[in-house]
Image (cartoon, rainbow, N blue to C red):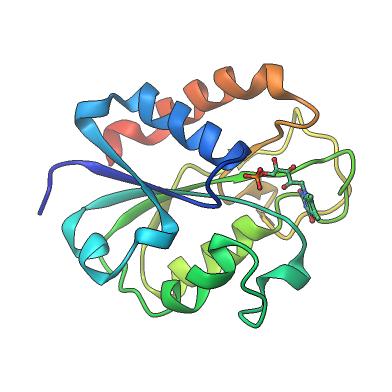
Length: 173
Ligand SMILES: Cc1cc2nc3c(=O)[nH]c(=O)nc-3n(C[C@H](O)[C@H](O)[C@H](O)COP(=O)(O)O)c2cc1C
């Protein structure tokens, strides 16, 4: 097994990729591999002890596997069958709290639920202050299940958020 962190992300080409690249840069290129979810398979999961997984939320209707318009739509059915037992995982999610205040970063919850079902250990829960939203499926017991990043409304906070978030769990991965 590789002694590295795998940063899995999707979709490619947008804000999620931008933040995944920033996360990888902060960890250090020699300590992590950046892998789009469309390239992830069982071997990928077996090869690493720990993961950081990123996604954007683009509407719950889009997560049906009948819709193959995004990398996660295609990946989700495969993701549900991967084995994360014994793996440590932190989640980040892109969202827009101003335009989607009732579903802010909801997709982090979908990812979290799959990982919990697969017996992963989740690290990197995050506080809800500093965000303005009404509802989010990604909040459990007053905490987000991972780090929300809002490149539409609070992009100036992204780097400091990523730094502070990584600081809370990186040494535990
Ligand atoms: C059609 C559409 C639906 C969206 N729905 C949500 C949503 O339900 N919740 C949310 O927090 N953000 C939502 N967003 C905002 C995106 O998550 C945000 O712009 C994100 O940065 C996009 O990242 P990407 O370029 O990697 O896909 C939506 C954006 C679009 C275009």
